[in-house]
Amino acid sequence: MSKQQLGLENLLEAAGKSFEAAQQDLGLPEGLQTRMMFEEAELEIKVQGLGVDGRNRMILAPVSLAGLAGNGLLARALSTIKVHYVAARPETAAAAPARSREEVIAEVAGRKDIQSLRDILGDMAYQVKFQPEVQAWTVRVADSKDRTVRILVVNDKNQ
Image (cartoon, rainbow, N blue to C red; front, top):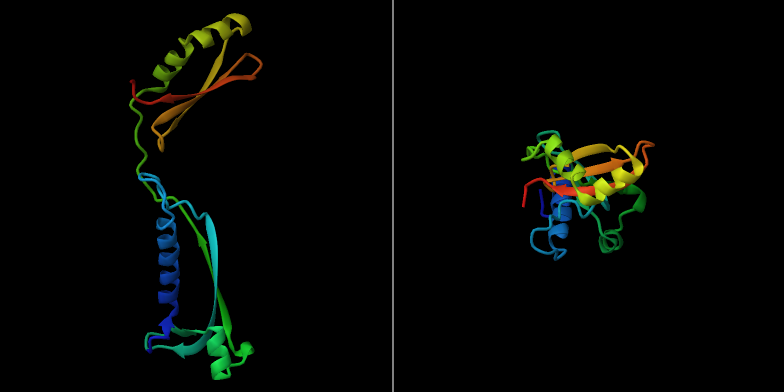
């Protein structure tokens, strides 16, 4: 293969690496992950199919406008490859919370503002969910009519 020819798999791999490199070059602050900056992107490439190699893989040659004009290629002899890039979060092991659901509810129920609301509105219901990405709990506090009276974020570790 010449420098202008490449396999389809290599083209797709290079496109993915290019999107990843572009995200890393955005100049984001230290600690901010760039993997999710491009939720979706699309790349369109005009190519000329050259056949298959010895392992039965498609061989392509990218074509530019200058190449099209200089070689006298017909536009209808070209193919278009669209690479649709969709970012996905890497699979990570979910971190176990340091505190129990009951401990978080007890902390929230013991807050002065929640006690005052309970004196006015009556019993409260608590919906608690651990958010491993940020090591925190989200707590929805609702009255007896299931009206949200507070939504709180509680750090997982006692400070």
